[in-house]
Image (cartoon, rainbow, N blue to C red; front, side, top):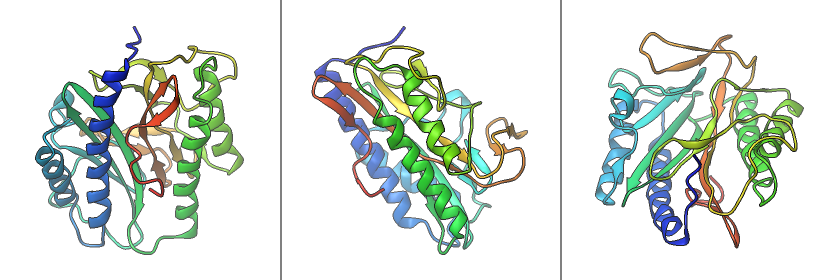
Length: 253
């Protein structure tokens, strides 16, 4: 069942979202060749906890860290490690959640490590743009199919592939709530959008094919063909006054 949020709840979610967004900015500011994914995770956890929140991901389903950190052909759910170091030319996806006063924020970004290829930069930009194409369809009376179609259409127009096996979701008192929020769809179909919905919209986009595979660690998801993948996510709320981007605290990121 979809849990619609009232104004007071959305105000708390804005605080959870602010902490989440700040944690991502901390991680971004430390991304460089030679840093370990473990150290990035430590910085994320430190910021969330000093802000009076808890990392949403730590222990979730047994996940052993506070951030999912995925490199290059890793799509999502990469496990931070003291033995994994960023290298010049990588692209790194950092996915963060913060639980504050009973509500979660959930957000992800793809960040270039030093100088990366033009193709990688385009992938990162298209993934970001596809999020905003979907967000533009978040209007009362529209349907989730309108949102998903807008995301997928922009991705395909740019010659990339939308991951369909993994999707966005409702977010609130639980990290994952109803409804499912696919990054593809049919216009005019799916759940009707209404005031009080809080959603995590998160396109995952591959340079190659859409197929993915899960590694034996039970978490890390990679592209099946080894191509680069990017991820962009914000938690958002649909209110009587329009859309609030709960985790997007830096408009340029």
